[in-house]
View 1 (cartoon, rainbow, N blue to C red):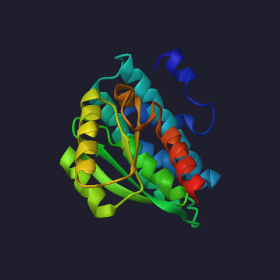
View 2 (view 1 turned 90 degrees about the vertical axis):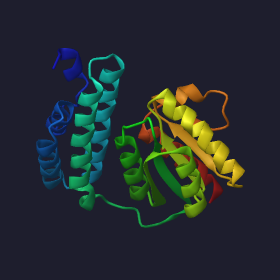
View 3 (view 1 turned 120 degrees about the vertical axis):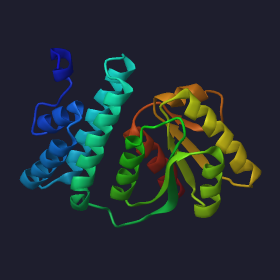
View 4 (view 1 turned 30 degrees about the vertical axis):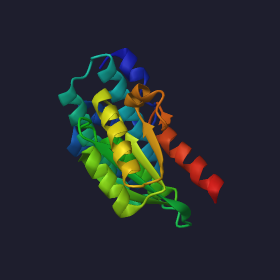
Length: 218
């Protein structure tokens, strides 16, 4: 790991967890995450660390320092760490009105942003619906009909997935569905001009936008 990469890692107890995720070491990432919670008593801070680590991974992938295979290893480590501390996460049991479905599309194999946003929504007291991953446009429309969410949130990494979201929206409209669609992640920049709410950043920014929309309606 270079000096530049190390400079991005927080200089506190989360440093070891960040390094484990960057190495794609899923067994030790889960172990370290649990140890941090045992010492600090706060699983919610670990969620922040995991998200920050995956932002570093995304940056390294964008500059072609990490291959797709390496990104997938890192995502697996992040998923394992998140799953290990999830039972200890503090949930706000005061439910906020509104249903949010989060799902990812075909041609966008990265699932961590979906998992992270679902976790954050649960922490914040929102009704979060896991719409699944690797969905076709028709499957997205079908799940919207089934679950009737107020907001559909879709993480986007690739331009191909962005185009599939446009197709999914057409299917949703054809079935009479009406909802707010939030596209977030780097792939969202390819949707300029579409009638979506675009968040060209991470899951935290998507969460903030969802909270802004639903709380303003409360």
